[in-house]
Length: 255
Image (cartoon, rainbow, N blue to C red; front, side, top):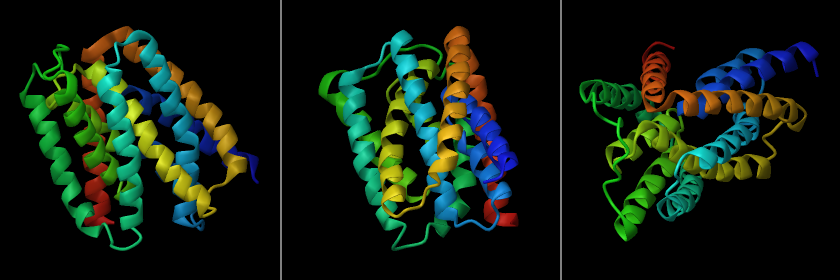
């Protein structure tokens, strides 16, 4: 194990944890870094190692947010449970059919999300939950099912889609939506990680250092988001979605 490789992926993991904790999208940083440092490794092993490190940062961010942001647990726990199960279904499906069609569609879906958010200046500014009780639970669980399945099947932009749907469908502000997204994303990552571990696709010797770095980045990012609030999270959201559009367009059409 080269100490230089470990240092590079740990620094990448730190930055990934920072971005991920604010609005998701840490995979934009960590996954390309892993592929650049280990070009001959099996992709599944790199994805497993990425999940093994990032799940700690996402989990820590969830806990941090829950201390300061009012989490609507009655709706979010069913959403997390639904996400965990449907993520497994998505991960199974990707072993049967190729997600190639999604690769081409994704940049356009993300572009629609970006334009909609830019057009609706008030979107996610105020925390005015649209549903209550069973209705909120069902809508939240629906979000968990759809995005959880997507995460297991394909993955890029999962955090951003969760934030957007919690804002758009449930009426959360960006800060509360980001906190909610962290919980559901942690759940979807658990099932994906379990699958990678079961198949032996994880490098534990790298995961430990990367997980520590990811948590440190996550602590810094969460603190910044809580300090600067919803407006700040919205700006980071727009930046991350823009970066995702560039990355997914490149992957789909030019690579």
